[in-house]
Length: 124
Image (cartoon, rainbow, N blue to C red; front, top):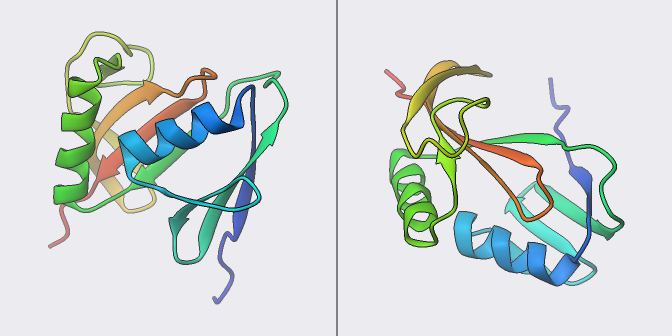
């Protein structure tokens, strides 16, 4: 299939604060019109609207990107956990099941409370 996810609209209470968070913690690039580039073919479009519910976004990355993100979470003292219901235990990574089966994962929240997961798969 050639179908790909192109963009997600994510409501946030403060666009600039969210842009800084996603850039600082995950290394995503800011682009005009409140876009945060995740990959060459996927962007988050941040809209200035207080979220009514928390979204869950999971991002897979290389081992190096994963380790760097975990280091930045620790340095910024952002609570994280080894499972979605244990954010704040500062343990991990845990194991999670995603698009490529089981991987090492860490869960944490963005400034608006959206549940974020980073995952790294060991590919054979």
